[in-house]
Structure formats: C-alpha cells, structure tokens
Amino acid sequence: MNSQAVSIPTRNPGALKAVWMGFLATALVLAQAMQATARPDSLADLADKISPSVVNITTTTVVAGQAGPNPIVPEGSPFEDFFREFQDRNNGNGDRPRRSSALGSGFVISEDGYIVTNNHVIESADEIVIEFFSGEELEAKVVGTDPNTDIALLKVEADKPLPYVNFGDSDTARVGDWVMAMGNPLGQGFSVSAGIVSARNRALSGSYDDYIQTDAAINRGNSGGPLFDMDGNVVGVNTAILSPNGGSIGIGFSMASNVVSRVVDQLKEFGETRRGWLGVRIQDVTDDVAEAMQLTKAAGALVTDVPDGPAKDGGMMQGDVIVSFDGVEVADTRALVRQVGNTDVGKAVRVVVFRDGKTVTLKIALGRREEAEAIPVAQPQDDAPAAPTEVLGLTLSPVTKELGKELQLPTTATGLVVMDVDESTEAYEKGLRAGDLITEAGQQKLTTVQDLEDRVAEAKEAGRKSLLLLVRRAGEPRFVAISLNG
Image (tube, rainbow, N blue to C red; front, side):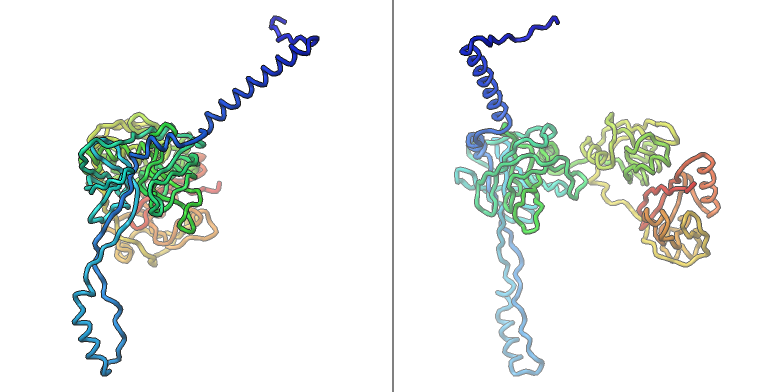
C-alpha cells in the first residue's frame, strides 16, 4: 500500500502514554470548540449590548364610560320616582369617559428615533409613552401601521442619538439556532429569555404571515419586542403565543424580520403599505387536479377567476396554472401571494402559466392591492327544485329563469345547478353540495347536462382518470377534480 500509517512506538511505555495524552487533549479541545459554537457560555454580554435599544411601551386610551346597572323597580312602585331622580342627577357622571392603559414592547431601529412594535399594541391609543432602558420616557407618534402583518412604526423626538439595533436576514435562521427575546412581559420590564428556533415559515391567519416559532419564553407584554440572533441582529418581532392558559408554554411566534423590514421601509417612506396586486383568485394544485390537467407535478397556483384588473389586462385566463412569477418558480398559492405582495406596484413582471398542455409567458403590470381589496361576488345560492339528471353522483339541472330567481343568480349565469349529491360518492367527499353551480368541465363551458356527459366521455376516451370541474359557491370559484371510475 502507498499510504503510510501513524507509527506508535509500543516498546516505549512513556512515549505511548504521551501519544495518547496528545490525542485526548486534541479531542477535548475539539469538543470544547464544538460546544462553544453550539451554545454560548453566557448571554450577558449580548444582553448588555442590545438592552439600550429595547423599549417598554405604555398606551393610554380614553373609552366612553358606561352607566352602572339600572335597578329593577316595578312600575308604580313608591321607589320609582326616587330612582329616576337619582339617575337624572348622576347621568353626566355615569357616562364620563375613563382612561384605559395597556403595556407592550418595541425596539429602536435608528438613532433618530424610529421604533418598531406590534400594531395591536398601539391600536386605538390616544397616548403612547416609550420607556427606555435608562429610565427616560418620551411620547411617541404613529408613523404608520400594517394590520396584515401586525406591525407599527413609531417615532420619538430625542435630544441625542439613540442606541439602536439592525434587522438581520431571517431567511438564514435555521431550526435549532439560538435566539434571545427581550421585552416587557406582564409589565415586569426589560426581561430576557432565551431558546432556539423551533420551526420556520409558520402561518397563523394572514396572507403575508411568515413566523419564526421559538421556545424562548414570550408572554403578554412581550408583543412588539425583538427576537435576536447571537450576533445581536433582529430576526423577528414577537407577536403571538399558543397557550391554553394565556402564559408561555414554549410555543411563541415572531414575525420574520425580512417581512418586517419591507413593511417598515414602506411605512417610513409612505406612511402606509403599497403591495403589488395581480388580480386573480387562486387555489393550490392538488395531485388529482395535476393529473386532470396533465401537469407533471402538483405545484403552482390554479387560477379560478380573473376579474377586471392587471391579470385580465395581461391576458391571463381562468384555468391557467401560474408556474413562475418574475423569474421565481411558484410552489403554492401562499408563496405566490407573498411574492406578489413584495413586488413593487406598477412593475411589469413576466408570468409563466400552463395552459392547454403548454406554457405561455405573459407580461403583467402589477396594480396596488390596497386599492383593490374589494372584489364583487355573486349572491349566495340556496337549494331549489328542478328537473333532475344524475351524473358523477350529482343530481343536476341547467340554470333556468325560475332557478336563477330563486338562487339569486346573475341574469347572465349559465351552468348546472347541483340539486343533490349522493353522500357515498367522491363528489360528496370533495365538498360538492346542493346549491353549487358547475360552470365548466374539462375547462369548457357548460350549459346543459349533455355538455357534462360529453366532457366525461371525451375524458374517458383520452384515458384520463379524472375530470376537472369549475364550481361556484356564493360567488367564489374553485376547481374540483372528480374521478371517472374507469
């Protein structure tokens, strides 16, 4: 063999002992280095460094007073006049406004006094007081808020530069990384807790949610406070906890800094958010939908409706599957919504869609979401009797004048009304119910039951395992893939 092994002089016990001691010392040094990298011995230095930039927030709100409970006095009672006179005399005092206070946390992001916190901390507040680590207090004004991400930007006027912290790159935070939370839990003020990143990309309820889950203790009053990495950069804003009792059980959520920093930049520049808007209704592509549309994988965003807006102007059609947006592959609807929202209003982007078995590239100039939140919908639909015909476990009837009137459909509505659904069929499992309106099958319009039967026959002849239906309920469209059962 050409390789050389390490020679250990076994005939010299002293030399052998020295070699082994060297090996042990090296292993100990490596183990200590690995431990130091995995977990710091103390967070004291980091806490000392960043504490001056963390603030306590006290808000005061003036709320209308409420009169006390009215005594129950029988009509005609000798006490009736007495209580009426008492109420009249105290009417003004009973409804006198009162002041309500609340506590939260925040952090300074610039030496000239910009402060980040949660929107729910300062919402409806008449007065906002910032308490700094030094004990100094300053009144703050609201620069702008974003309820969608629960972020608010405040501003204080100080006579000297303020200590501040920077946003880190939350996309680099890995599950298992150490993090530290600071804030004002339960009004205790400037409290530090530590833990790890428990999970990434958590969604709670909003379209733009991107939460870091952590087991660092977060309680009431921590809202709006920072979540730091071990370099002292803010990787999240502590926003919510999951708890059966209102206290920390080790499941806390911090809005990712990459989301927050974009919101803050817009609030600072415009006093409001300006998110991109594509103008489509979409749903995720499931495995059966992908098979029905002959897609190679269940990914992208399936367009269920294209109302008036940028997408319609750019040539997008109902039934398109958006597979790429502005050069980035679309994984699902949530990813698309976030990417569109983070794109500049007015930017012309290239959108690649899958249509009729091939890809089509569209160029679409984005609108502004805040200006187009309300999208018209049709009136809700109810059950109504009609001449039934059964297909795919669905009892169907074409839209007639009588049905349209009873179901409050638009006068231009066409399609097949679901009169009943066999509960033993896949159609029922997929959520179809009486009152639904099926407008398309195989991405072709339906006006009669025969149209649907023709689409079923065509799909079977083509060897397709399922048929894609476009279903509307209460004006909201969605695609449903129904198996053809051979």
